[in-house]
Image (cartoon, rainbow, N blue to C red; front, top):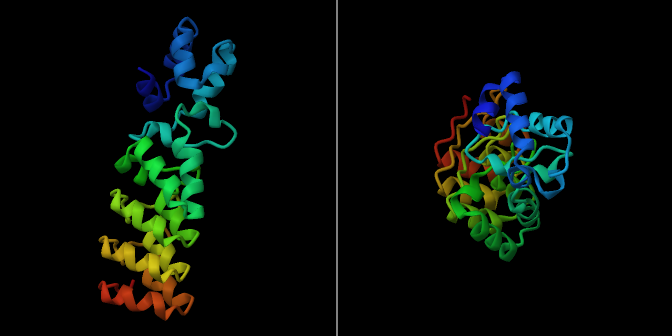
Length: 207
């Protein structure tokens, strides 16, 4: 029922749902954290509205700034991003095991739609990239602007990460929302180190 309310964004259903929630303190605690048990109707309504867009298979992994307590499991929204950006492979391994490797490796982990691979690429952490790919992280998933990990690696001239992503079937022609391709951004920054593997992977110079 919670997911149905989220999908339909129906105000009457929302009101009815919250009234029922308030009569079930245990469910309120499960969904929104222990601190919400004594919350008022308006407070719970505000929290539910924050997650109105969360009808997603990885519901618990989405982070909305200012409301981190809404997420029951913080592994994906706190520890995992830190492990990826720092290249801490031991912490990353622990996060993947705790949250489920396949889900955690491809789940959105911030309000910008970044996946773990995006952060590992952006912070130039090839060991983290390798571990995420081994955990079946998808090199072709896009963040909110349409950038894939391959696109980011090409843009940042992260040659080692780019090679790993392309070897894992990363798409060298996957375009960002504005139409820019990995080859285009690599050429824009004059990165021969990125262009060489992109062309070897059949990157299209005409995109």
